[in-house]
Length: 504
Ligand code: BG6
Image 1 (tube, helix red, strand yellow):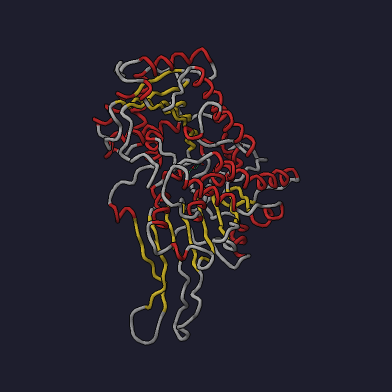
Image 2 (spheres, rainbow, N blue to C red):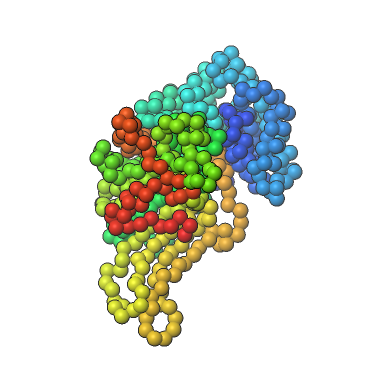
């Protein structure tokens, strides 16, 4: 049973309107993703892409820009000329100042009247996607203009990119403004981590197999680690990042979404709302953090130069006094029947030693040691879920080393690599997500209540850091290229545990 549209069900006619079409996200991620879907034959003939931006460019100028972006962001072996031409043929561009009401009739003209859509196509049957790859301060104003210009039909959808606010109040304000024009089922809030194949596979691994789920609770699991480590710094995004920091940029969305998928209960089936209902319950069950908890259970760090000629974060953003965190580690707990007493350790940071996203589910020691004379100790089982760059799973077991002369216990691992198992290209997160918007499948998008529950949980951390800043405190320094501040190790050390190595 499901209430979802089938994967094959795509509308015959769709207008995919990208606001911010000449920006980094559109050129680096969205248009290459649409190219890949076109190459797979998924875009119907009646699929148009309308780029809207303030850049002075006509259709051909925009096509040239996109052609260059495809060369830069699609592997050469996948860039076939026929698909490039087909995709470029779908493109239109409109130079428009989103805040100037006088400009909007031109978008209305293009969507309602222009070729190449044949006159016999009923405009009410055309799916309209409005993708807002722009600053969140424009979300409300753009939605209002779309409404005033009469462009919002029942088959219209709006896609919002993060950051969805910088705290609970601003997130609510954005949601209210967008909600005046679009009903909740028409609003698609992107968290691109949910589009990653390895992240979707988490649900399949848990719920399409019988092996793990009976063990998936405080009865057998000692703790869970969720790490999203990046080796790059903030690069050109310092302006945005210095206002955000790792907690808003990564934890409030990506890490908490991963936590939800690890911890949620199985819904009866995968449907429009019920996966999101279950994720919401996890967010609501997170134990709230008071000021003393933040002090004890949250570590904030900021990278400094490692002495190898690399720059400190403060130098990159040219503000020696910045207290923006580039690293966060948190000890979280979920107060429900399944997870009571199981710590979930979260960590994320820029300029760490490796780029890796992984989830470690550490099982408990066997209840009884029955090989007393054996060499080596049984190591507790561990499931390593590799999200990126390597995608797969590693189950750590204890085995007997072959040979006579007593029993020698050795840790071994069962390795599953998706690349080896499936032997085909893994689609980028945006490919799946963009097609889900077009076909109207909201499962992998964040609902308003989820976003707000996540903000509610991080709010005391933001508050405690504000107070700490006012008292002159600073994030803990960690050398670029390291695993973060020593305090992050102490967070687990205090519980008698250690983080798994990043490169395992
Ligand atoms: C984005 C953050 O949402 O995710 C970036 O804003 C971060 O700061 C990026 O680098 C990480 O995404 P990925 O897919 O490269 O892990």
